[in-house]
Length: 330
Ligand SMILES: Nc1ncnc2c1ncn2[C@@H]1O[C@H](COP(=O)(O)OP(=O)(O)OP(=O)(O)O)[C@@H](O)[C@H]1O
Image (cartoon, rainbow, N blue to C red; front, side, top):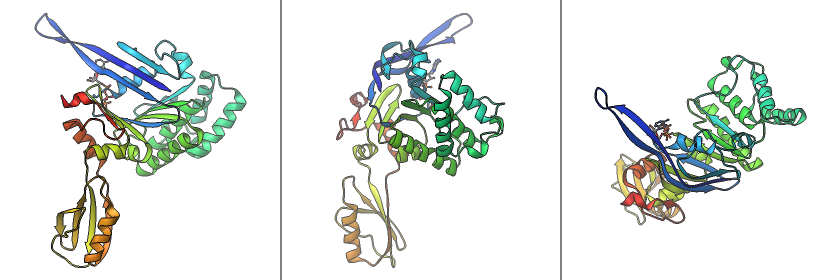
């Protein structure tokens, strides 16, 4: 569905360097990136501010032309075949709306039908489906300017999907949304991907989105691909400990069991670090055999921490299928 081969996008920045002189600096916003995304995948595209995410998305949707390298989306060259591509791809930018501000949502969605030349009967069925899945019914006739952020985002998703695209590209779709709206959007995206097979590429700073939605993550940093693999593999690659929190019936000296190391105690509560690949169930059984346990809970390593560590230190190359760029180590 997406093929990106050795793609570079450079910008030239002109700065005043004196009274009359101007200096030019070149920024490689995207620096020799290669990846493919197969039909039906749900991929998270992550990276810190300025890493090159938006530049990549703009090249995938034909807004920007690569300086070098090759991009194909649904078999098309995005910058040359932008109109043909628009019929096969839906795009949502969380920070701005594509809806007509003064029109009721329903009218915006009808205008989109004309833009994409969707047949009236097909549109009617599709709109009914999207209305149900995104729960648009109560505000279809409200002008877009009066919608809450969460309602507007659901409206934008509907607008991006009216023409039933094979690929949906999302740039920060849950930004600013409250917990309930986020949950609605996430549940919808999961269904879209699983039931309709829509390929989804998601750019987000919301790591909750990634944990709940993406089977694969790509991390970009300074224009380079720093990681490409699954989230569990990223955790493994960074050797992140899981933390078992144990509530004992009464305070006790630090617990000593095989397969874990006690890293903190506070009264009857103790925190045991279990290295990646360790068996948490075995540790729980071993603890319960020696102590009176009232409660346990297991905390996965926080993905935000993992990604920060990845940016800061790089990670071991080639970890069980998760690909990590080797040049980070140099
Ligand atoms: N039109 C432009 N002209 C000059 N430099 C640009 C332009 N667009 C982006 N850049 C630079 O390219 C780099 C990557 O920017 P990009 O917007 O792709 O990052 P991003 O990962 O999307 O960041 P954010 O998370 O903040 O949206 C940055 O250094 C940015 O300043």
